[in-house]
Length: 429
Image 1 (cartoon, rainbow, N blue to C red):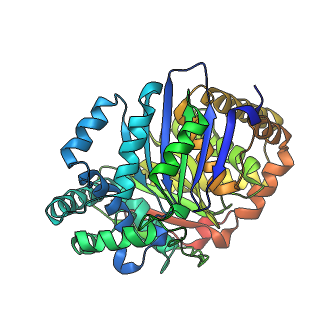
Image 2 (cartoon, helix red, strand yellow):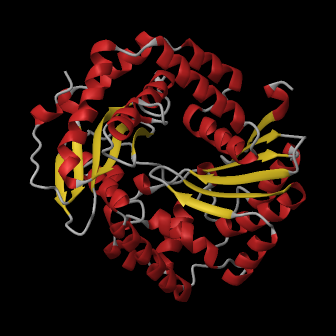
């Protein structure tokens, strides 16, 4: 079936967008509501408010109590999950196709008519503070927050998504309601659904649930910070003596989410550190036995990105892991990648793309990503063609563009074993 027959889009005058993809041979349906607000949309005083509201909408609406929401969510038979990122907040549920209307009504009610009762908000403040403490007890998460705060100094991207204990303690029901009313607008909401669903029915449900006249659902609301960040290149060595391992991040600036070089950049990450055959895995783990967890990934935002290598190792091995990681970057810049390496990661990536087509959850996430980042739906055939067209020279060009010594940053957390790191040690020329 042609893409234009399976994917349909409706854009309402109030700014709301509805996208569906029909999968007639399955009995599941995944429904997602994306709010184009995240921690990047917050002032320093309100850091964490989007994440707080993500929690708070589960605590009761004008028609449902918190217990009602929990029971109804369980009755749907699927998992109702929510998340907050730097640039989005999402609510996603996967259900049997004949329960899609009930699922839609539940999430729409949570987003349009949350109660924000102070008694419930007081409890939720406590829950989120415990979540913050979990981050403090997780060295990988703690290192990531520490690192981002130094890479994006003074910018919302450098603040923790969940906020701080101080800001969370300041969030009242009144403050949450005011932020929600001002910013959870129809123009900031995208609804995506994939599975055995009818587009016109989903669009009708959306039109009924999000009328233009509803208070708090006006067309325009707060958008992300338009301030493009200037990335710093810190070297951060933070002692935490009660850890058995030292945790390490080596990073550089990277492409933005919509960059045309994203196909070559993705394949470069796979060659360096995504998978058991990747260079970092084979060298640091398999050849030298220095780490259990090691790899590379990236975070791409609307106007910038971060590439990072992560590893956890014994303190006495930290220096060697740094040198081996920098060495792999140098090798790619100097000698490029082989045709065989590139063919392997292309096969892996294309297989992953094709396998994702079997999942309504994967498809709905792709619908939302394509709409938010690219403003259009990208056919899978186009994605595969773009991946297949990437050459070894394309991959090397990305490495040479972004892996510059002056742009390399490093953060380490744990027992540092007296190690010192200067810019010369991070030389990737």
